Image (cartoon, rainbow, N blue to C red):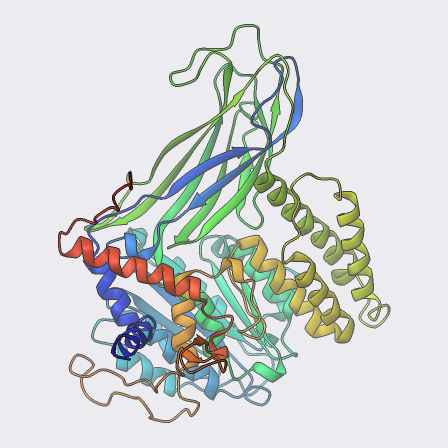
Length: 577
């Protein structure tokens, strides 16, 4: 029993962000961002010209435990809520939760509705000012009349534009917009030029509250800023903190900033970059050099996240004598070089050149070959085909559809498009639909039941896949799990244990450096299985938040961190003769 008790205590500590921070600071090593390329075929017959040769490009950020810290952030929080339709208390609670999640190196600015008093109109360091920021949130008032004189988002962008360029060195800037959507509806009819230019610089993570918010406008803002769009339906508008946690888990674990993938066709190969599938990440192919180069702009990379893109190449027949390249054998050909430019966090801040070494894409060019496609590339190509299908459906069936006619059949039409797409690709070797079939069926069902909520659902689902980051789709519990990192898991766990009341429970009334806020006890991680008296299972309260695999992996990270912190050597098991 003693061992079981100790194990339970250790597992409870798994959810403590304090322990996580201690382990991260103890880890002495530092990992770089990984760049990898995987061709659709590892071999191309020497005499064959391939007009669309697909290459999977993956960018993988190191987990936070492998870094010595993370990039400090400047967070702008914009609140614009009509108190007659949405309760302000869950929103205030969520904003204070966000303030609590920031570190002393971060800074914050807060903009309330135009009818409210100024909150924090300039960046304020969190260090020593956390309680001040929370009190400012308590003083917030909602919007009480329609058609405010100015937009809070406008003011936030203007403030960011007025910041000196030096203020961005080694920092990441983000906007979190929480709104019922009425004030941003005007953007559907066009954005001012200065506004569009500013949006491109600062990711806006938009959260729409209730069925009355304008999903199309928020989706447009998120797309233009390379941010994400989430929403909470009428039954979940009190869960703003948990919805924000899906975003904050990434924002507070930024491993690198200014990430940009540079692609160059191998010199003398005749290879041309035709296009790049990159979702909502900006990508381009140079026309000056005839497609010999291209790039993908990622911006901030969160710890532990993976970005997957598909590069489409034109590959001509190989010449009789392949160009000699160091590290490439005589029957191989170098097609592409991928490199990553970014500022990666180190012990002294951020280093410009401490990223990843260039990666060469090399394939074999035999006289004849049996072509077997790579399953991982096939599935990523199919995923981008699904997003393209959805883009066409949204453009033709939702954005350009009259408000009343033809709504009830949209879900059925979407399912029909999906079935057609699957049928077209049924003979693709290695294709695995995975969770896509269930997810798209859920999107279609939502669209059939309620047009407004269904539209928000489809926009949020698309935002998640195009940015490859989690979004709340009506509820914080409804997310695309593959994009949820460990830090998001932990942040979400803290959010769901917040007290339900908006009062002073758990508040710290003394100096923030002399006491800690007490969180209410979390539900037990393990519960009796019911089969016998000695077996346990994961508590159902944590389903969708954490898995036993997550726990095992995190325990391994804790062990490795402690080994490094104490300058110990990890013994390897001896081979048995």
